Image 1 (cartoon, rainbow, N blue to C red):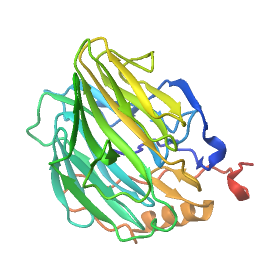
Image 2 (cartoon, one colour):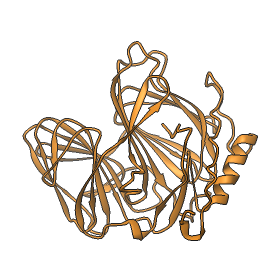
Image 3 (tube, rainbow, N blue to C red):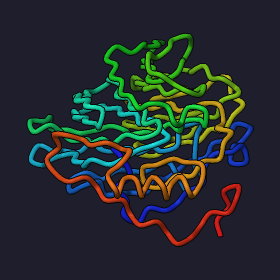
Image 4 (cartoon, rainbow, N blue to C red):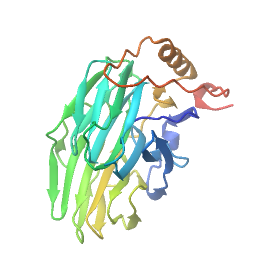
Length: 321
């Protein structure tokens, strides 16, 4: 899933100036965005109050939606650069196609990881014969400058490591948690984990004090460090923690996101991450002209046109004028 906003804005993210160096409890409310005809997402990052969490630069939560009589997710071919997309499902299936020729159905608790590097395009859709419910999250990880022009590639992992404790099961999506390491390729120190809690349970997750963290609520009722976090909202936690107390009021699903604060300033526009306005202008020109990002074959429909760039330009060091 991607950013289909036709009124996309240029967003400056990253840099330690945006990082809270101590533990905090900052509850983020989502912005609701339509994605095609039958899917609405709750966008948590970038947020007016918070742009990134470690290298995590984009977070959408969607569903659970009843799509039994609907087409479900239908995202036409579109481009990416400078980032990784992470597809994570609790219910349903998503069919991934890309300009490398990849064709893969991603199912619940399987990792679909696409590294765009210098350029890739892809589409995402619910299969023709799909499950009744669709529920998941789509996330982006910003690539550091040293790796943002690498060759694009796609990974699909069905066997992910699991950390368990009484009343808790944590699947490690990316990075490492309590000694368990995901097979997904990463380019900065980070963690992404899916946490399932049994109603009435209490647990503590080990954390890295140098990481900044946030928790996205997927389902159920839970308290994160004493703060109730309802489905579709996210609690930013800052840095400086060695553990995270969790309490489940009911059976609940959470996503733990964290990583070393992202040192570099990045420029985000539509589905691209660059380092300057010129990077974005060039990407838009290349997508419009049909060069660099390749072609997605097999999707029934035309690719998405790029939105117009706003007239506002970026000053050096990412300041808008």
